[in-house]
Length: 162
Image 1: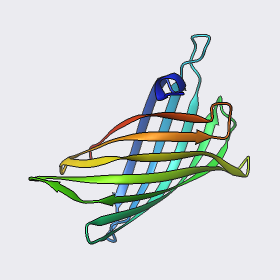
Image 2: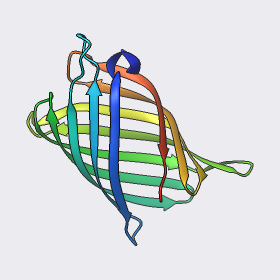
Image 3: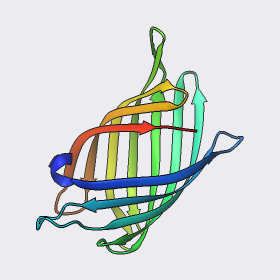
Image 4: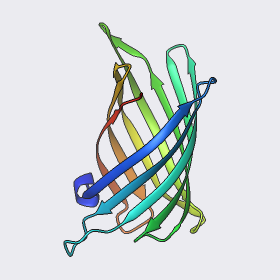
């Protein structure tokens, strides 16, 4: 299916982060998803999450690993998931503009099921528009171990660091 068919509803994310002297980042946040149900109602999916991100650079290449642990509850079975992410990006300059084409993989390990239940593959461009606005545009594929095996769609993400 496509992203519009599989994930219609309301999403909210609130979080805080701290960049360490090493360049690593600690984050703590809340993610809420209220999917539209076939009967016209809305479901509930609440997630409390924490993560540690390590970044390294080498000759124009950027490497990132994020370890995220989240506790999920609501209409979904309650439980913990581990979501490591690996990303590789490379600096590309177009005139004065600097962008980073990237590829990323993120498996979702569910401790209740003792298996990887979903994997995200994403590719696109990270564009630091200003030091206070980073735009991420891409396309992602979601592979699930459920009734809907494959979902794909666009990704648009705006990060506003303070």
